[in-house]
Length: 468
Image (cartoon, rainbow, N blue to C red; front, side, top):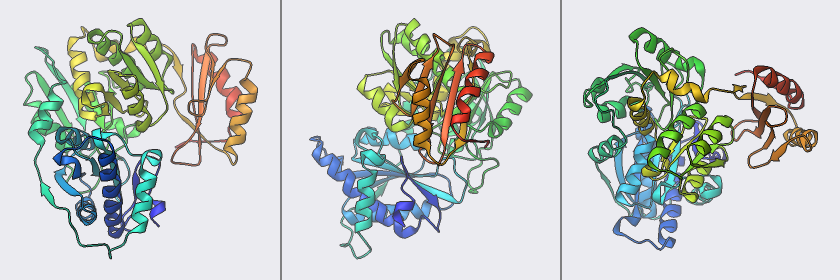
């Protein structure tokens, strides 16, 4: 049963049928064994190296699961610093702020309320995925039961909000500009984090006016799915921006590690377009630095990074790979199509509230509207992500390789990328889903006509299109 809740990047399942209290205890034990062992072999020893930070989101099952998780960590001998109900990026901050062995957030991010799970990080808030420790944690968890020795670890509650607020605000500078924004917290953790950091309706920041939507998060229910990548979930943000004549809007996911921006016209801003704009902003203060971006991003990202004197670093899809790319290349900033944004000065980790603070700071310096700030990056035609069901995914990818091997550049960093941009005016990436039995297609072209032609060529090789 344990294997069914372990995913590529985290632990997740419906509660209490798939993910149970007993599993939470076992996972706590296994995670403590892994994290403390990793810390001990790192050669970096401090009094905090036996500590694991634990936080939880607003789901009704989270307090129980957090308690069982903590019991399991203590049973193994790990000490716990319980930071309470916090957003996931808070855990990344706390692990580094306290120099702990790792951290665990009890959350199911954007999944429905009957789901829950665990996002696990090791020392320095480095992500723990299937290839970076999650497999070992699963093995350790499966080997232990309630007959384990009595708990030898201890736990304490600690309030780190003041330090976290100072950290996030270090990314914010709107000068004398007055800015009105609409925020949809999606009944998730942004409903706690945003008022604490920026004040109720932005009252803690001079010149900032925040219109709050769906900030109530104590019922365990969502007005809409807390996933801002689905356009229908951003409709309340769009409506709010237009109704209140706001400068822009922000829609967060459930655990507030992702966000999506809406411009003053009610148009959703592509996260790759935002990456291109923020890359130029960061490179002004950090000339020559590397900027990481995921390989599905518009060509405008790479082009704008080079034009601004930066070093573009194309990475695989997924926060494990993005954080790794940023660290390896000593990059200052990174952006992913999924709405994750990464910051060197945030321990190379992603954060929805820091992304919001950064957008506010960049916008405050720009002489114009949000749409005008973004428009230069919106210069190519994009398909968006299109999903296909097919029985033999590998055979389909092989057919794509064979069809295009001599027509453009082929890249297999993540799936298959065909680059015919210079010769035929388009490029495309086809990759397997990490979480579903699907092939995912992203394509872009210099013109809408070229995009249509490319899609008509590629789509028949990929199976049945799935619209969801």
